[in-house]
Length: 132
Image (cartoon, rainbow, N blue to C red; front, side, top):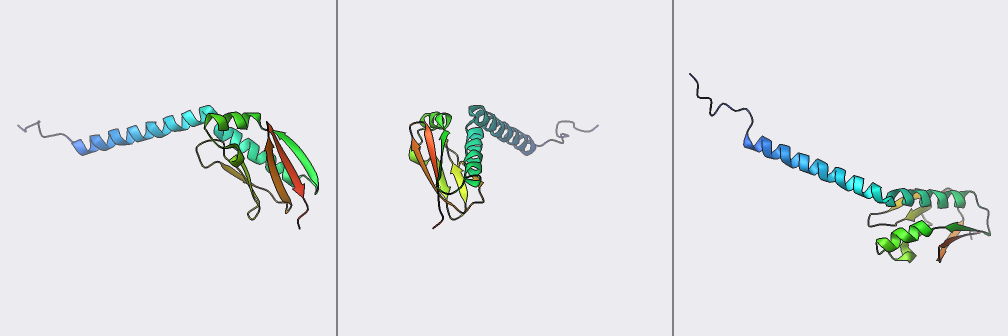
């Protein structure tokens, strides 16, 4: 008869790896669900795309007001300074919106206009200037 005590196919290392991978998977899943539950990512994407579309559909010397009350609420909740919420990278033609603690969301636009963003109260003023 064989000794059945040492006849296991699963080693301790395999069990440890299994538990570590499960913990890592559920931690990442929890982090994703928590962050999407706050909707910060969704609003970053929405505002970046709206501003890019406004810039692309505008003509020179045009000004557009955009209500960004929700963005200000998220920024205040995350202790984010209001002057860094909306940034236009003129060299790359990209609008960057950062409302939370992550890197934010960037979205490109095609126009070569000089764009100026000014935040006052709950309104974002998007001023399109001639490219000089």
